[in-house]
Amino acid sequence: MKLTPSPFAPASFPDLPEVKGVQAATASRGFYARRGVQRDDVFLFLMPEGTSAAGVFTRSLTASADVEWCREALKACGGVGRAVVANAGNSNAFTGKAGKLKNEATLAAMTKTLGVPKEACFLAATGVIGEPLADPNFVGEMLPELESKLGPADWEACARAFMTTDTYPKGAGATTEIDGTPVAISGIVKGSGMIMPNMATMLCYVFTDAAIAPALLDRLLRETVDPTLNSVTVDGDTSTSDTCMLFATGASGAPMIEDASDPRLAGFRGALMDVFRDLAHQLVKDGEGASKFVEICVENAASESSAKTIGMHIANSPLIKTALAAGDANWGRIVMAVGKSLEPIEKDEMQIWFGDHLVADGGMRAPGYDEAVASAHFAGDHISIKVDVAAGDASWTVWTCDLTHGYVDINGAYRT
Image (cartoon, rainbow, N blue to C red; front, side, top):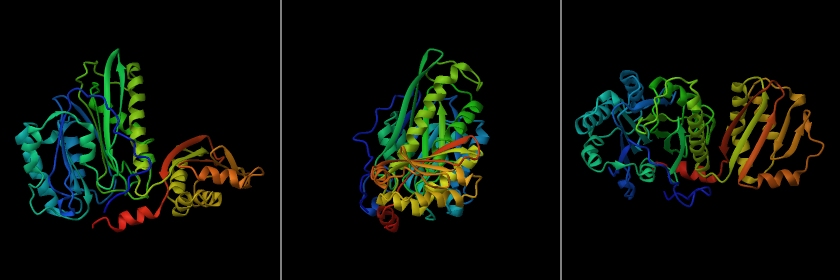
């Protein structure tokens, strides 16, 4: 089906910095040809020897064969990565023996063509679940063509190659310094529906030319993912293929950082968080059928976990999401979602804001509540909801979008 571009789609793809040591290529394997669409749908990234690698993956119990391989490879390689191949159009999930054969063939092609160890090769696939490929080497036979096209990463081309129902390619980047040496960070992400991270819901690849030891890179990735990619939701569904990987080539010439407490890491840590937050927000802004970007802040909760749980109950409520779509400032539905979370709250001290307007206070509608002011805020395309549950001193922020008929149209026609 023809997708309507997101109202938040940027006028152009961002100008991402070159990450030294990273080469990339894209090609078309024809996954979308049966739908009459000619487009690139496979990409290859190649990194130099000594590149550190870290990854987090879906916690779904029906994870794809590609996810299972990546988990195994990360353990086997000791946090060293050399190559990534990803395709769109077929998720290679719930495909049984055929899924494993596809991976074996692709990995064999990568090791032969690129001359890199099997355990340093990573795979990803996104698209329809449960459709095995008739030819196990369907992706693998593309490796010679991809290898011949390798060059400095064209971030936009790669971001387009793994799009499914995305309406625009998504990327973010930053530059910073480590001990006076400039370093770059660039990343791409895909995702539009089936988005509620339970590690991460989407495919996301971020690269830096900083020199970060594998164990530290893994720690940085995990501490960065939780308040960013793991704090967004479009529809409450977690994919079988969710993958987020971070690679550090060390090619900038900056000194190797091995200790999380190293003061030279401060600027890099902040820049990395900025990149991941940007990518997370873009996922929500390109949510299937989305017309509004919504930030939900839960304050004074018993714990960060409790605050996040409450926030996600609000963000995933169909009643709230449809009210958002209609511009209906129905704050009673927020009350409902907070209560059903079963998290600790002080009901008679709870407060709710829509933007800067206090709509509920002390267990009831706020004395100064103005329906027109609340409705005006809900009529906008950027909506802020804040809830103070008066149960502690912890807070969390999650991001979501509204639920429109566009979501039904897209998912009703997904396989056609």
